[in-house]
Image 1 (cartoon, rainbow, N blue to C red):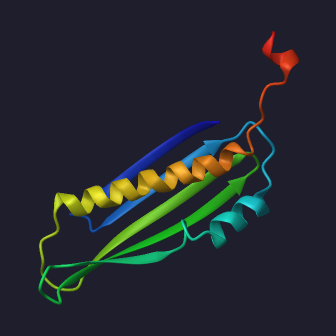
Image 2 (image 1 turned 135 degrees about the vertical axis):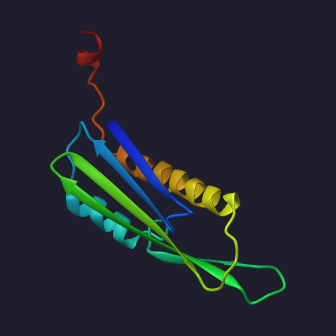
Length: 127
């Protein structure tokens, strides 16, 4: 499986994008992968909230993910949008949380994709 991952955006932009493209060597069944991502509690579109201690101030991070399949090429796109409810400073910790979440999602996605990879047959390994 060949992969290419691009992560862009920052707290300053208030949005972060991730595109991960995987080229599979095995046969891909689009409906199966799309169904897994659509029904998965891991990849579900979700809102996360961060609160400032002792106040009602909060920031919302919205995550949306979608998978696209064309033959044996699978693309996963994830978008994080930061919605500040009040004027509070976002920190490097907030940005690192998003990066960690992206890394975790990609690890889980790659585990799912491994089941679609073809392994060389014993006769092909000797060549």
